[in-house]
Image (cartoon, rainbow, N blue to C red):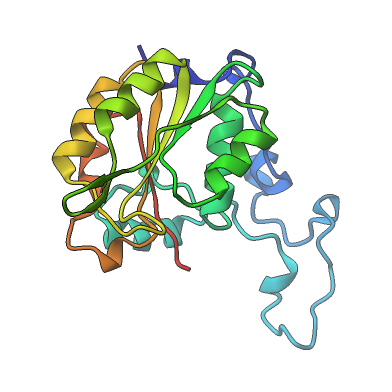
Length: 218
């Protein structure tokens, strides 16, 4: 089974949007005037190069290459968005059918996971953090059981957690991703990874096609 089989059925053959520059005949790709894309034919005095009057690349390759080198992944493993909020929203919308496919979160946690679930009318399943010897901890056995028992398509974990600060080990993430294989996508939000002693779990991407890692420049 491919992770693509977890997508909403009506989206599995969806070609997606292609901008005018991407959809055009390759022989015309170097054309200077793109009035059909509503780009200005005039150069602004504040932009002598004329580059700012053109639409940027949706997924700029040079930026992806540089970020891939920083994060230790391949450029094709990267999707650049307008902050993690957009990534969270896209994941929920692409994977969850309204009223059917659940989202699992571990409160107290970053609020956007719940917001995106509710906007999609996806059932929201909460597995609260437990108060352990070393502070708050995520009960991963309970998370796995909740995901399987409620037909979840997305499981959000925050490591280090916002606002409680605890981190998950690579072994814990690896194990949970395996338990959710062919069932749900495990999303690990590493917005604050630079403040953690735990390494990033990006190295696990090659082993789990149902693992997504969120990073942010904020």
